[in-house]
Length: 555
Image (cartoon, rainbow, N blue to C red; front, side, top):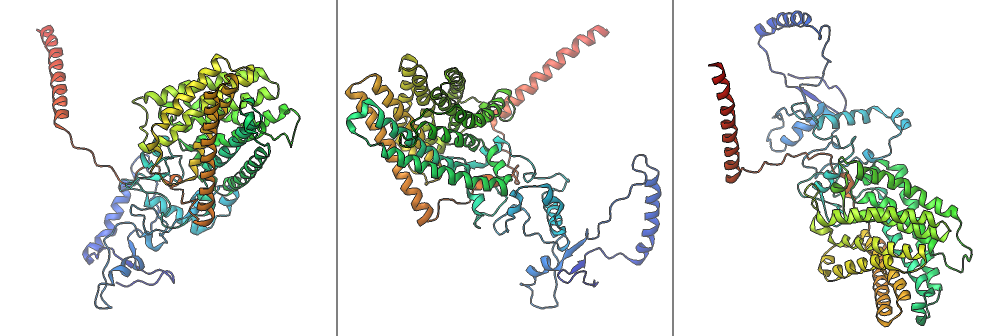
């Protein structure tokens, strides 16, 4: 049976079953009976099913183009079995499938959704969205994945990703975008780039302390080093912030994916911590006046509202309760309280500083205990996350510095926090093998920030306890942190401008909401069968005992 071309680019062949003439005459009568029967039914009276013109057609281009390669004669034609994936000749190259290797990515799914763009949308895009929805529907009509429209749960990130920052997709997982094709730059620019700003701004604080501290006065460190590092940190902050603002404008859906990421959500606190670091470490050449309280309000205000949101999720429970999402990067959401306390004390607001210190220390204890004991209800962290454990050092070190700044002396509480940080620092140094064997990434900058904070706390301790061991410890830790920052700075320049491998495809934001392939259920073990058999037997015996008193009462 031949069919006329319906469009210049698509040809269709009718694959309906050929019906004998006698059956064809009986079909209208049978349809009339069915209509009468359906019209007498209750709530569905008068309803008609929508017309589906291409429900039993297959595209010649999608079906015959592959099979004709093996056929010898040109007139020979074969048809594919009816699977419902041809979509009657519509373009389906961007549809998500289980293979996913040869597909062409549609980066528009991560673009910012606006009312104006929805009103100006064209018909082909509507058809494409409809085809994607149909491709994700199973035989029972239920959707396999709603990851384009719904938020991804925190547990899904732990199940689908691996690596030091949960940025690598597991082998048995699929993503929404192609892995081989290079993505747009803004999609490849992660929130973790603020780790560069954290490392540089904390170094500005360190070198200002080295230049001013009486414990390191014999080194004769010029203040010009602090000025150079401060300007470099300011340039890095402006560049990263400008780029990420562009990402928020054009790819806001990707930013939402990063916000729901259990590790990257903590980096949304980083810009405000960097701003407070820069305010604390202003070079004396640029400003000799005390800081204005408005600076604290501008930098600490957004941080405080964001932590209300995050701490509320930890407290209220649900899918994002602390025992589910706790990880070493959670200390970034706590350190800002101590840095804000230092800045509040410098602007003259000591009571506000005490309030922030109390809030930060209370939540630090909760996070510290949660990470230490690893509750059975929490998601297990992979071994590759161990280098991020350097974040443990940041909070107690910052708490020690903040207490010293508020009360003006390095007393018992400040020393307690410092000794906790020092012990954690030593425990990480003796496990140096955890920090080897990893590929360089921008996230490595975040590991320098806790080391620098511990170095500043050691300088304050050397001021309170002036002796050779304390000064030697302060100089040693300062040298280690500065050397680490120099190595990372050179590596970043090489990967960014020479090898151009600094920003690979950000696979973490493209995972699906649910696994497209079902996991095989594990076989039932022998001891499980015995346990279930005993449980069933005990239930049967208890049921018989309940029946016996009833029978006796009837007699």
